[in-house]
Image (cartoon, rainbow, N blue to C red; front, side, top):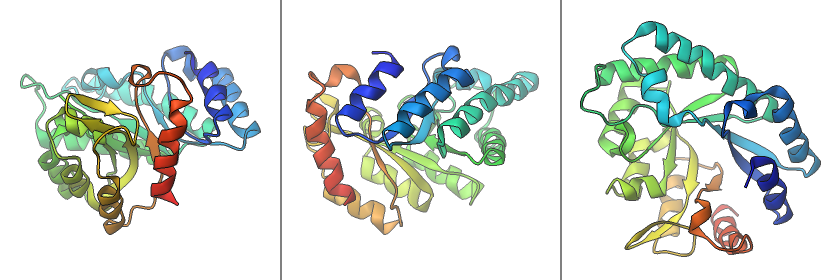
Length: 249
């Protein structure tokens, strides 16, 4: 389903807080973004975050030892920051570098590259938040802890439950690693053999997760993030919405 079709369908189900996944470069054009913004405004909705379609290429674009390409990558990401500004979004979700043993940048250099993007985002009023992602450098709580220790106040994180499960990590421990720098949550459910389900369809102890986030002062939003193959009819989303609403209110 195209973005301009999915958004009205979700609004019709009484969803009013969104993360917009930019799927292709034409969706970064101001005319297109403004059309989405009109749908959002007309329904009294809000866009909290944007997700780049270039997430899979960030190793090459942003975390390269080829300085000119990294600088060009920063320039390209200004398009996302402009889109976020037009949509009123506060957060850009970052995957970062793949967990590739052939990488020619050190962990410290990774943190420095991230810091440049984080600082650039701040000039647009957008927070670049590192997500924990399976098969990426960020898939281990220990890496997140070291990143937070090295960067101090100049970092932010997105917790994604399913990505922690896929990486064989404890999502609660990942949340602890992010601590008070947690700014955004992709919430989903899981059970043995299925790592991405609608909230309420698996075995996650959401009450425990809620308490853990509160311990770190998190009072932000919870974005349901699943793939289209993870549910049948759109109406199934309503049950998940009730589960998530119960965690917020």
